[in-house]
Length: 228
Image 1 (cartoon, rainbow, N blue to C red):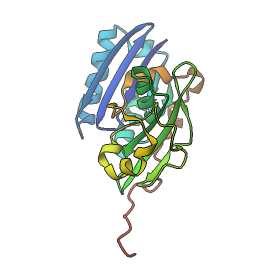
Image 2: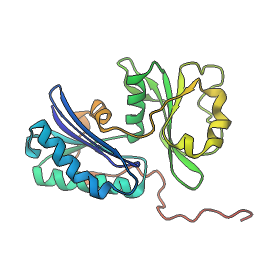
Image 3: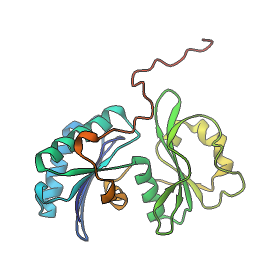
Image 4: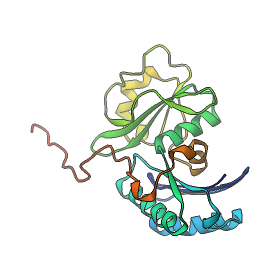
């Protein structure tokens, strides 16, 4: 298949193009630069892959959860490109993409992916390694406070790791759960080439049906004050 993958749900602006077995990727980790970086990265990747947008089979979208603004950038760019080229979009979890990289680059059997959701919360995804190395959800992705993760039993931690920037952002979360993990992965952000490994053509949708995985419905929510 010929696919273009895009994710801007984190500080990483990441793009990949796959044509058959050939892969071209661009990846930049620069906060608040996605609007400037994304389209030139897409053009460069398509050019290097020697493929036109209209030749693609679909666009793979990193659909979050993650940065509200970042998800909107990727969604709107994907929609515009898809409408113009008559393509469908395959939405993929950005947390699952992090898990896919962890499984592809380590012997971990389980991974807890946490990304910063602000307000002292993380976007949490729990995944086990599937039969073919793919991430299989252990629980639904959710907002999670700085508290123990109930699904992860203590005592079976040897091949279970953490991944994602949220663990660094909230060290208390790691302290409360460290007995559940055997290590920490260095994978912090989604990489578009791992979005491609998760793309299922049967999940392709019309561009108008994109619904970013915000998880928190109130985009502008005032945190509760102490004693309220």
